[in-house]
Image (cartoon, helix red, strand yellow):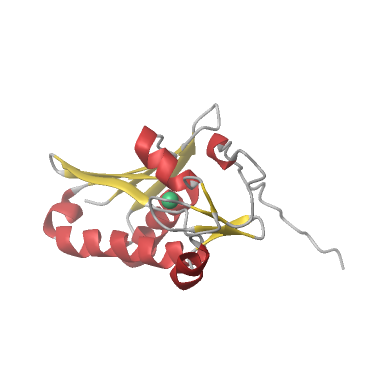
Length: 162
Ligand SMILES: [Zn+2]
C-alpha cells in the first residue's frame, strides 16, 4: 500500500529580531524579565530574579518589536456577529494569547483596537495571529483567511462572520 504523506510546507517568516543569534547565557530582558537560557527565551521569574545581578541585560525580541512597533501578525475581525458578540470574542482573543504565551513567551498581542465595527489585533509573531484566527474559526465557524505577505514579513489573518 502506498502511503501518501502530504506535507504542508510550513511557512517561515523572516524574523530579524531573533538576531543576534548568540547572547550571553544567562541574559535577562530588562523590560519583561524573560530569561535567555539554553538558546531560548523562557519565563521563569524566580530564576530570573536569582540571576539578576550576574545576568547580561538585553531586551527580548518581543519587547524590541513592541518598542519599534514591528508587527508580524495582523488579525482583522469583522462582520455582524462581532457586533453582537464583542465581549466573547475579545475574551477568546485574550485567552488565546494566554495559552500561546505558555508555549512561547515571545508570542504577544501588541495592540487590540476597535476600529468602527471591526477589531484589529496586532501581534509580535505570525503564530499568535494564526492561532487567534483558528480559535475564532473553531469557536464560531465563519470565514477564515490567512495570507502571508509576499516578502514574508508578516501574516494577515481575516476572520469574518455575518
Ligand atoms: Zn522582554
